[in-house]
Amino acid sequence: MLIYGALVPHPPIIRAEIGGEETKKAHKTVEAMERLAQRLAALKLDTIVIFSPHGPVFQDGLAIRGGARLKGDLARFGFFRQWEWAVDQELAAAIVREAEKEKIPCLQLTGADLAGYGLSADLDHGVVVPLSFLADESVKLVATGMSLLPWLEQYQLGVAIGRAVHRSPRRIGVIASGDLSHCLHPGAPAGYDPRGKEFDETLMALLRAQNRTAIFDLDPVMVEKAAECGFRALLMLLGVFDGWQVEIEVLNYEGPFGVGYGVAGFAPQGEEEKGSSLLPVLRRRREEALRTRRAAESPFVRLARQTVEDHLLGTDGSLGNMDKGDLPPEARQPAGAFVSIKKHGMLRGCIGTIFPTQPTFLEEIRHNAIAAALHDPRFDPVQVDELPDLVYTVDRILPPEPVAGPADLDPQKYGVIVRSGGKTGLLLPNLEGVETIEEQLAIAKRKAGIGPEEPVTLERFEVVRYF
Image 1 (cartoon, rainbow, N blue to C red):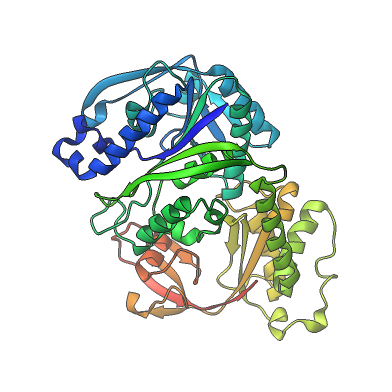
Image 2 (cartoon, helix red, strand yellow):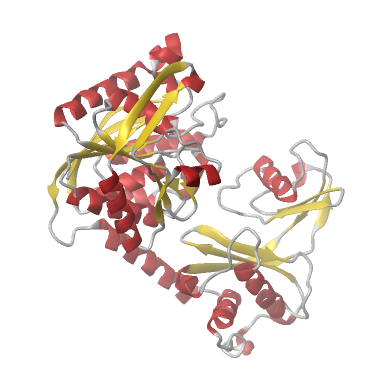
């Protein structure tokens, strides 16, 4: 049964054996962890489930550390002590079964699996640091890594874990291990970005207000800019409490080293009334947003979508379904085109041409829509069951022009082309999360395999974007 939950940070420096005098700068975090430890000790837990972003990370599923016992230390940080816990194998197996019911891949990694993936068999510091405060070695442990699933699916994974936890006869605590923004001030580990402080303050305010739903309304760009490592673990923790009343208590928040440390307790208060689960609400919101977008999509975007759907479903109606009389003149003129596909807010494919390769813009869209769905080397080909969840945009590329230097760029207005030797990189304009010229150039260079300091020639171009 679920007894308690917590969001905790995992910086090794909060151990005095590692940080020494520096640990005093985070004394409020240490005190909050000690208070939380006292609370957990009084609850007499049998098992702790802990989610760590520094454990095995998989794109579309969750890895649980398997075996009979798990051990870890902080030797690489200068603290030479080892901890060891027995694994709650029954609960781990139940979590795998519940995740499979949600069609979310979940597996227990054996020693051979870890070796095959090049991963250490020892527990990572995202597990060891919090548990060095919170759990003696008499409790059993289920330690997981993290997935890169979209937010709703991350929550759904937590719901599945919650079912296994609630049905267990053992007294269980669930811990989300994760630091918040890593860019709170100049000199922070991820550099400085003002959105880091905005993210931390907003998230802490929502937790204090017990407003779980609004967490899913956070600006994804703000979350990305915050350079955090705890948000997905928190979403899983919230999922564990789906359908339950919970009292959230923020025990402390501070960021003395440019990284946000939040300590919060989650005390279950009993099941809510039937039908109060947040999961179906979030699903309906996503479906309604997609329906609204589909109803308002432009003819060029509809063409891209129908082209992919016709190809995968074996139908043929893309051009026939379009009223050619309503199309603007550029439809039959040649032009370069980029087709971008997203799934649940995450890029699923993007392929384009700077200059036209087909007789008309319509044919350019059709050609590049198939390429984006099936031949983007960064992704597996789109499958039929994904079609209802895909969102498309189309960019018509206007002729590029050379520029003298970065001062002539504007990431909101112009796309950029960088060239060095035989290497070329391109980035479209007005992309979420790309707010500065420096960011735009860095990404374009990285895409081309051009080093950060390598000299490049620059071109810029404008686009007409269709939604």
